Image (tube, rainbow, N blue to C red; front, side, top):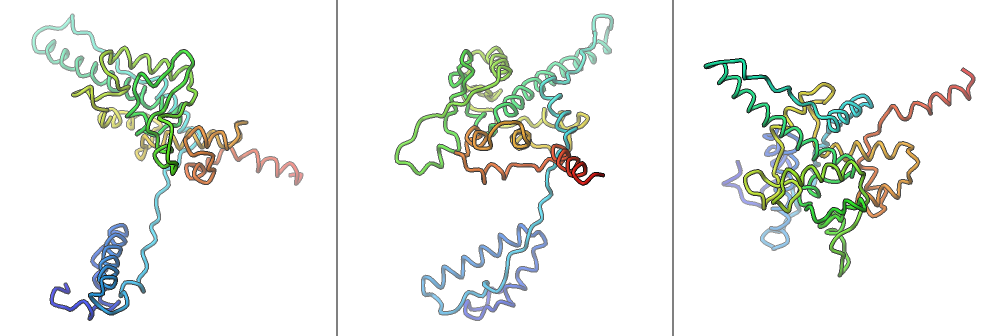
Length: 289
C-alpha cells in the first residue's frame, strides 16, 4: 500500500487507513503492534527523525466470551468424568455372513471408543482433583507419585520455572485424593512399560499430545457445553474451592502453584452464582421480607 512512500512521509492517517483492512480485532492489534515496533526501531536506529505515527492510534478493546458454567453443568461434567459413559458392546455370535462382519467391526470400534473415553476420564479426573494444568500432567511420570502416602511430586511446574531464585527445588509435593491414586494405578496397568503417566499411543517415550476424538465424544454428552476445554477443569475446581468451603484462599493458592498470590488465583474464579444465593436470602431475612 505504501511501497513507494518514504518512511518520513507516513502520517497517522496513513497508518489508520492501513489498519482498516483488518476486520478481526485480534489481527488489528497484532498488526498495529508490528507497525509500531517497526517505526520505533527506525527511530531508535536514527534512520529517520520523526515521531512515531502509530502513537495516536489505540488498540481495539476485545470482549471475550466468558466460558461460564452453572452448578448443574458442573455436577453433570463431574458425573461424566468420574462415572464414564461407556457404550454397550453388541453380541455377534448369533449373526452370520456380512452382518456378523459389520457388527464385529462395529464392536471393535466401540471397544476402542470406550478405551479412549476411559483414559480421557482418568486424565480429566486427575486434573479435576489436583487442580493441575494439562501441561503438568502431560509431563508427569509414574515415579513422581507416592501412592502409599498419597503424594504427587510435581516436577517442572510453572511456578518453579518462573522462580527468580538462583537455586530451586526439582519438584514440589502436593497431597492427592485416593481416587487419583486409583486412576494412576489404572494407568500403570494400561501402560506397564511406560515411564509417562499418559504416553503417546505411537511412541511411549513421548507424552500424549491430544485427546481430540475422546473430547469430541465427551462434549456430545448431555450437560457438557460445546465451549468446554480441558483447562476449564482447573478453573471449575478452583472456583468451587473459593466459594466458602472452609479452606483458606492462601492454601488454595499454594496448592495450585500460585505461591500464595491471591490475585493470580482469583483470575481463575468463574464467579459462580449459585453459591452466592444465601447472601441475598439472608439480606431478605434482615430486611424482614
